[in-house]
Structures are given as structure tokens and as C-alpha cells.
Image 1 (cartoon, helix red, strand yellow):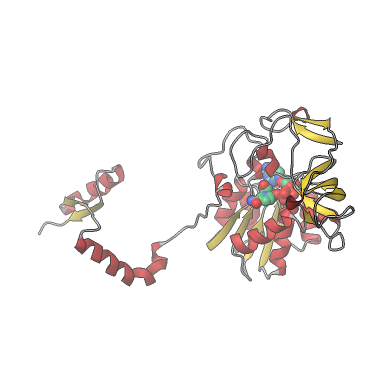
Image 2 (spheres, helix red, strand yellow):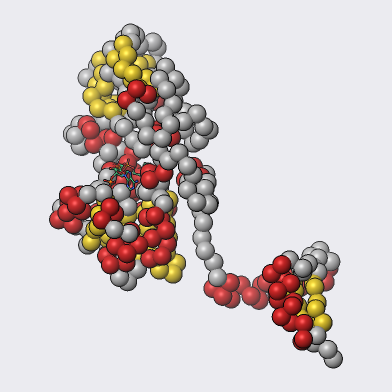
Length: 332
Ligand code: NDP
């Protein structure tokens, strides 16, 4: 049986020499295990991150060890209850011809429901990413205008189509070739699409979504994210799914250089304007005035006396000369 090993950690774009296809023994299954002849395995963008020796939400690949990832195959030997020779299973030991899998890490794949390869894509991890990312993370609702990058890829193509099926007012996609753009509009039913290599993303997005967008599903990061922020309407939402434009970068992008951590840490960033929250005002006054009276809440003020000094007070505040609220006091 052959299996792929990572033999060097890539710097920038991975090179063929960073990988090696090596021979390995086909072991017999132990108790609770199945031996699977893999029929398909997945190659995914997140695997690039696993080639770096950094702590992340999935552990790095080890050098000179088989790589892993999603795979589907046929059980050829079983010592696990519920799994018989001939069953098809989805599991996590890809990048190899034969996989010795703990049965508790395998799930059955019904080839009647979809072609086996579909369990790695349309009905698999990438399909689920599209579905959950759009409906839960981006809180998509009927009538939203949606923009998705990486739109001809596994996740992106499903995001755009699910948005249409769920009643999006407009779906716009970007992709890296004119052929992909044509596919998005003519086959997948996107309302508009553009090739991000043909010109600035911000301009092309504005032309494709002149009334703005409500949801941005980000697969790419960088210039796409910047353009989307410009085109997003009030109360718009961004699902930060991936930032593939940066996976092979050797230099960090401009600050925030660690923006991609929002993915692994599942951070939620949401803008706010105090004026939206006026319904909370009575509660605020009641609670905070109580704390002030009881001394539980401390505050200081910096009062600059005299209207003549107002401009200095303002500039002083910008320089940090205030402690607490900077206020101008008028002479009595
Ligand atoms: P895709 O099928 O979309 O394949 C990757 C695509 O990325 C390529 O086809 C290419 O298309 C595009 N691409 C590569 N470089 C760039 C670039 N510099 N700028 C713009 N596009 C680029 O992969 P997936 O659907 O599997 O994944 C899409 C994204 O979703 C990735 O960012 C991935 O990391 C992320 N992801 C996140 C998950 C999560 O749980 N957060 C789960 C699964 C995926 P093109 O020709 O258009 O450039």
C-alpha cells in the first residue's frame, strides 16, 4: 500500500519535493478496527496550515508520517461490530491506499444517496461548511443580498446556490477565471459574477451589487474582505470561513496581521452604534446611578475651566491629557 508523507515543511508555496509517496505495510485490523480500501480522499485548503509547525485548531502534520484527511472507501476486512466487508465508509485517514481505521471514527456512506465522492464534497465537510456558514454564522435571511468569494470552489458554489434556494434577493460570486464566472451565472444561477483577476475587487463588486450586500461569505480574505466591507449594508454580516489568499504568504498582510485567528478562535466581530440601543437607556440610568450613589462605580473627570480653553481641551484630550471624561467648564 502506498501513502503520502510530508517530508519538509513548505516555505511559501509548497513544492513537489516537500511530499513523498512511500510504501507501507497493510496491517490486519485489531479488535474494533476495520481495514478500508480508500476509493477517494480529499485535498483541502486547511491542509496547507497543517504543513506548518504551528499550534492551530488541527494539529500539524508530522514529518515522515502519513498525512491524513477526509476519505471514503470500502471495508475489506472488519473486526468491528456493525461494519461488514463491502460496506462503504467515510473516515479521516486519507492520503493513502489502505487505511486501518478505528470503527468509532468511521461513518457509513450510503452510495445510494449520492456518489461516494459526494461524501467528501456536496454532502460532506465542504457542503456542511457552506450550509452552516451561511445559515448559522452569517444569519442569512430571505431577501439578503449575498456575496461569496471562491465561488466556483466546493464551499463557495454551494453557498451561492443555497442562498438562491433560500430566497436571496441577489447572489454575487467571484472566481479566478472567465470560465468559472460563466459557470456561476449560466449553470449555478448566480445573479452576477466577476473574475477577480480582471480588475480591482471593490470596483467589480460595486458594479455587480450596486445596492450593496447584506452577507459576505469570505473564503479568500485580503482584498476581497476589504471590498466586501465597503459594499456591506448596515447590519450586514460576514462569515469568515477562510482566507486562502494568505495561506502561502511568507509576509504577513497589513495589520491586523493576525486577522485569520478569527477563524480558529470562532470570534464574532460586530460593529455597534450607541444610538441603536436607546431602548436600554432607562435601565442604564437606573443601574449606573445606583452604583455611583453607593460608591461601587468610580469615575474621574478632567475639567478644563474657561471657554477660551476649549480648543486646547479638545487637543489635550487627543494627546491623552485627560483622566476620565474631558469636559470644558464655563466660568460662572
Ligand atoms: P475550493 O474548492 O474553493 O478550492 C480553493 C479555491 O481557492 C481555488 O479553486 C481557487 O479558485 C481559490 N483561490 C486560491 N488562491 C486564491 C486567491 N489568492 N484569491 C482568491 N481565490 C483563490 O476550496 P474549499 O471550498 O474546500 O475551501 C474554500 C475556503 O473555505 C478556503 O478558504 C478554506 O480554507 C475554507 N474552509 C473553511 C472551513 C471552516 O470550517 N472554516 C471548512 C472548509 C473550508 P479561483 O480560481 O477562484 O482563484
